[in-house]
Each structure stands twice: as structure tokens, then as C-alpha cells.
Image 1 (cartoon, rainbow, N blue to C red):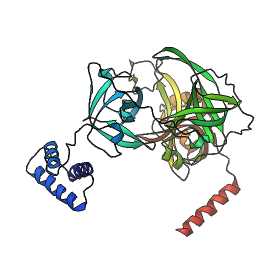
Image 2 (spheres, helix red, strand yellow):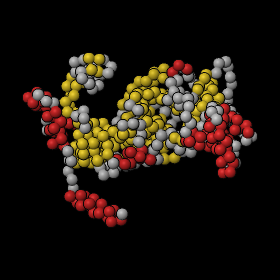
Image 3 (spheres, helix red, strand yellow):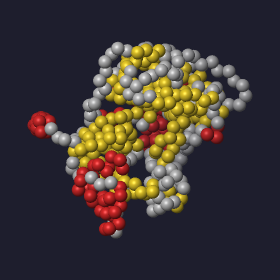
Image 4 (cartoon, rainbow, N blue to C red):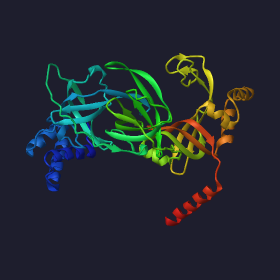
Length: 437
């Protein structure tokens, strides 16, 4: 196995940290010693143990208490109790992956964890005691998180074992504008206008439960909410919610609250924000819910025009094949896949048939007829390019960031009537910035 300089440097960093940061001279001595062991073919783990012993440190793989963990710790071993287990689906390197996440605790404290490693065979439950080896610690949303990668091991401890977990300190109550919320916050207070109310039944460990959901807005933005208790929420009412908590997925934050929270009506007058968001701000956050953008169409991407969908799952067919249901008789559809540039960044946008038809001035049947007459479906894409390329657009939808970049499925898309005064102002600002450079 070839060991890179990066691997050596990372291992030396861990040894130095474990020895209490003994100084630069000692670090160079450790680095030289480690490189010598590797040059002589000593396995990396053995080299680490020998050097730690030589310089008077404990073995790096020794078990740690959660309270002693620090951001940047590598090769971490802990024994802890599972406090919660959750899963979510993500796209990584073009593949669908299941991520396991939750909280883990021991007698010293608690920490959130995340695992790309498949934990399904363990059938982990709340209260299980587990031994984790070769994990690492990073920072997520300003807090430490224990991560399990491909080389990590996790084993459920058999037999009865008591472990008293200290209660985490209560978060200080704080009121936030919706635009400033991020995932992982607790004891949150918000005052917002309820813009929609729906309900669904979900299965929980204690049985079926009704969840009330929708979107709420204030002067700074719009956000999703989930209420695990019937507070009698009504559309267009302004409410103050105290004691809520937040979750984040693909850059979109949800406000969650239940019977332990206080929800009261408010006399505050709220005009929901209609301002547009620069694409660079969405990129920085990793996504946005119900975001409005304005920009210019700079590309009509492959996959635009006439497409066929599976009649069972509605997914796009590729050469008459559905990934889930095989060869099927597809149903025709129309869509635009475009790239919008607002001067601060670019965003891939998918626009469905209902919004596409008025944008190009033709409906699905007209597009099918033209394609059949020309014996070429590309005539529809050509028409889209002539209709939309370099045209300004106003688009609204949920934006998310994955391995393929920043994307949005539009729930509203309209041509943008440019204000000449605004254009002049933008041009003057650009010239000022160029002069400053």
C-alpha cells in the first residue's frame, strides 16, 4: 500500500494532538520517525502505536468520552447509547444513498452522528449500546458531529448495560426572522403568517399520528413548518410560536413544534416578502425554500422538449425504458430544462408543461403535431431556444444543491418585464465596480 505525504501528515497531526501539542521541534521529530517506519514497510497502524508508546502517549485507538471529543479528531473510538435513529435519502456521486443520523450519548455528554455506512443490518433502536471504532469528528451547523465512514466499525453491545446520559443544557430562547433560521436550532421563537395548512398521517413508534404542515412567511422570507399537535392553525392568521426547533435538508429549513410549545395569535401585520434572492446566496446556503430569482436564460439543456413518462411512476423514460418498471408505453409530456444566470451565479431550472406552454406559446398537442410533420422532435427544442434564449425570466421554486450543482423545479415562471431605470442603475453600478477594480 502506497502511503502519501498527506496520510503521513494527517497521522502526525493526530499523534501531536494526543500528546498535548508538544511543540514544533517535537513534531518534526515525530514526523521524521513516522516516515522512517513507513519507509521500512511498517504498517501504518503499527507505526502509530509504536511512536505513541515511544513518546509517552496513550494508544490513539483508546476509547474516548464524548465530552473529550474535539473537531478534527480522527480514528475515534467511543462507547455510547443510541438516543435517536433517523434516515434520509441523498444523491452522492450520482447514486441514491441512505444516510443514518441522530444523537449518541455516554456518561460525559451527547453528540450528533451521521453515517453513510449501511446500519440497517444492526436494526438500531433508541436505547441500544453501541461500540464505534475509527470514526471522525467534524463541524456541522456550528456543532460537533461524529461521522462514520467506510472504514468505521459499529457493533451493538449484547447484554444489559446501564448508561446514564446527562440532560443537555437547555437552549436559550431566541426570536428569529425566518431568513436567519438554520438547521439544528432549539427553543426558537418566530412570528409569522400562516400561508397554507395541510395534514397527513404518519406512522411513529407510538402509532399513527396526524401532522399539520404548510408554509409560513414574514417580511424576510418563507419557510416550511410541521406541527405535531393540532393548534387550530388557519390560513392568513399571524401566530407567535415559542419553543420550536429546526431541521435542515438539502439547504431547506423546517420549523417544527408540538404540544410542548406555545402557539398564540398575534396582532402583528405581516406583508410576506416578495424580494428576489441572488443565486450566490442560495449557493452559499446549499438551497432555499420557495425562493424567487430573476435572471437571463443562457442555455436550453438536453432533456428539454417532448419527453415520455412512465404511466405508473411518472419518471422520464429513456429509450422507452423506465428504471423501475422496464419497457412501458409512455405518456407524452413537455418540459424545459434551462440555465438561469443573474450575474451572481447560475441555476439549473426544470419547468413543467403547465408553465412551459405559455412561455413558448404552444401547447403539448401543437408540439406533437409539429414534431410529427417534421419527423424530428428537435423542432420543439429549436422553438424553445428561439422563444427563450437570452430572455429575462422571473422564476420561483425550491432550490437544492447536490453533486450536479444547484437546481430548482419551478412552481412559477414568467417573462420578466425589464424596467429601464433599473437597467440603467445596474449598468452604472457595474461601471463603478469596474473602476474600483
